Length: 201
Ligand SMILES: [Zn+2]
Image (cartoon, rainbow, N blue to C red; front, side, top):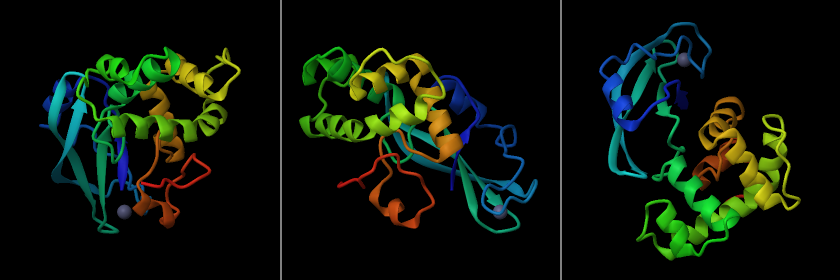
């Protein structure tokens, strides 16, 4: 199970503080809810593309001594099951959908000048499908309701709240994904998908 790492800072600062996995060790197991059963259980590596970063990061893993399941702490600048950081996706979507830039210009704004057309279209399509639900869910976090149309309104709300704080709320509180959960997680019912329609890819 993935949980949010309660750490704010840069990728470099994140990597540095991993030398002490006990520093942010959760005080309870989110799966069986036992108190203080988690022990450091190494790391796994995942790829990450940020504005000025393209590589892999380590993710802390913990083992519950009671239920024997593992919990990993995902840094809050990444989205579960997404190689691209929240910052990159946010910069692209704001540029493309709010500032009405071309796909190429929006990719450049996100420091991804060689982004494939399919990926950019996929993000736009997924965000379009999330906009209505995001407007409803994020309304408790901001009073910004400038745009009448849901798509620009959702983006303005995310900009006002901050994309990472919004993700912290969606994932940390609601187990909801800013864009979409991968298909293999949907049928299990353990995650909340904001979208009324399941993802097609
Ligand atoms: Zn447990």
